[in-house]
Image 1 (tube, rainbow, N blue to C red):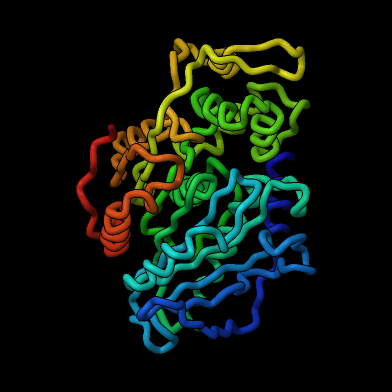
Image 2 (image 1 turned 135 degrees about the horizontal axis):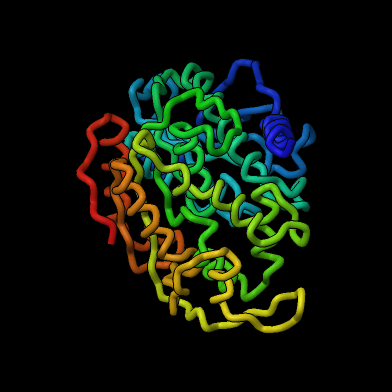
Length: 374
């Protein structure tokens, strides 16, 4: 019953397909030799005034092109980006515009998309399933985009930062293991590789709970309550173990197998938080140590004395992902850098050529040698 309802809701919020021909009118990007941009293009029927409470959750995207229409190499590599924002804020028009312009200068076609958020002020407490349905709707739109732009998109690279990094891993891995999520996603265009920029890979782990709660300054409802809703549950109604089971399902490491696409991982490491630190549970008002999460999750492992962090996400999520990729035999490239959450590409310029090189190699099927997880 729950699965059927989730599928119905997910597809309802994917929006009706827009069958009208796509018309592109690229504008030159200032201070760029070749790069052009088209803003607020529709990929579905949920637009402002037609099911979208705000432009940040409308089914729209911005398109960055390495030239004007008719000037683009038909085989230009295609990159779809999903923004971050803790699954409840953010938009396609975020701080990555300069990066996308640079990628266009490097010959990439880049689409940065909006999707429904878990925010009542922006239209509702939407779930992971609904967010993935929007990504799938965008991917189903790509043949129309290819025709309008005069390019070929036989397969794509997909990437995201933070919450978006989590969603793109789920989407890419669902294509190789759809029975786990059971959402009936179409995957109309194959994913050649996936890039996660500080995206959590194991949202059910005690380490992730600790890192997120510390980031939220001990706000249990604001953090744990958000995760309950995202996974399809209700805060205050579901016990912790039920929520952990649902979060396990929506953890990318759960979907890993040998058929998953090559993965590019970029994570930060800026310090640690002691698990002896306490927070206050609203239920009884008594302070609890962070170590309680291991018990609540039913873990038989001894709680860690500290959890590594990039300021938001636990470093253990990087370890879990890269170890899982190695075990499954999935090609990957990985970097762990001493910078705060999602700031690495900006703070360490040499990571951008590294990213572009790996995107190109994986899109062409020329897979670079695996890098050992740290």
